[in-house]
Image (cartoon, rainbow, N blue to C red; front, side, top):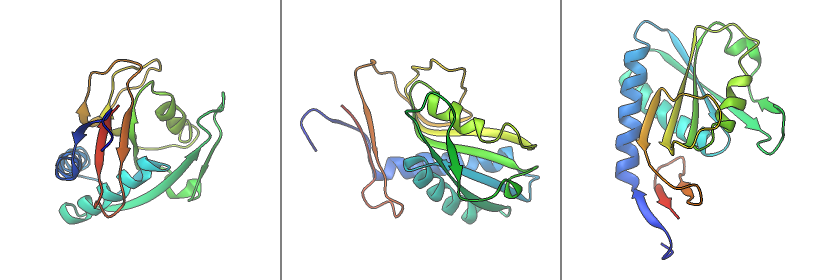
Length: 169
């Protein structure tokens, strides 16, 4: 670990956060037959994969993974998904990302679903830095972290969970 980084969450703590979020998602969707876990590429998608694994162990509803590729530097919504719109129409959508900073990424992620009827949309982030400049609310949060703007949160996550870490630098 570089000297200018502080370990915020280790592998075990990240898995505990994922487990808690999965149970919250389960409680929020007890009557559903299927939910869509829409992960923003790439760390949001990796978190969605991990959530799906946990949800499959504790719930009876089907979880479908959806990958959202955003052009985050664009001044307008430019997004691609790996599944057609018909796969998420009239379903519960859980939008997943790793860190909420300004809210722009989640706002763009929500934009993907605005022209399609759905039951409800919820948001998941592993770390909420509370520096929102977009009107975005998080429904399920692993950790709320008070930071200053010049600090950076680094999420290192692999799908298998072997090297998971969250650092503040």
